[in-house]
Image 1 (cartoon, helix red, strand yellow):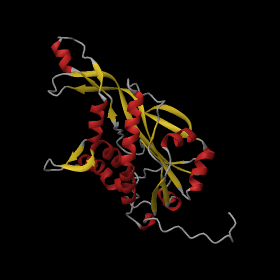
Image 2 (cartoon, one colour):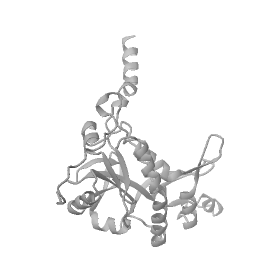
Image 3 (cartoon, one colour):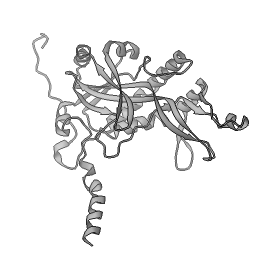
Length: 285
């Protein structure tokens, strides 16, 4: 009986303490106090990352256009999290911004999760935050990475295991000193997971079957196929199309779910309005 109670207690522990989980790189109270005004930079594309698509330029143009269509959705979801006093979208060219901010990219394999981690130039970052009167800025990057996966045929009778080229989405919230206050993928979750934005390749099981080939060829999807995948809408319980695109919304939900402050007590209430700065008599502070 004692062993049974112990087992049940361990099983219920995540449910009991899960709401108090801190997904930030700083204490939640510090984050709530310091980050009241969040700026959201345009979603950027790392064209020099591991994107092996044959029509790379056309793919980047497509992803850049898709990003601009979904930035307002990300801002709305961040506002809905009630973790910030205000959230504002920054007006900038994403290609120019990425070029001016990027210090270096580092391919990482942490806890079996492969992703690209980004490091930014401190002075341009601080200048961006200061010019827009922000406390911190959210930088979101879409990049390419090749990683192993196992994909099954529609009948689930066959599978093709190997390396596939993916588009992934990563994100960081940084302050003017370059401190990473929060990041995605997030390694503070109990169950680590990281879903790519899109697999650029697919195994052609039909061709393999038609040619009675032992090896299944892996091909790149067409641009039109990628566009349709990005435009695919979610279905509701009655299998009706909703207004949300499946792929981007899934990424944004994964991110914003890790940005909600714990409100089980009064220590992390919604950030209050920042104090008004006193007049400096027309002089710059």
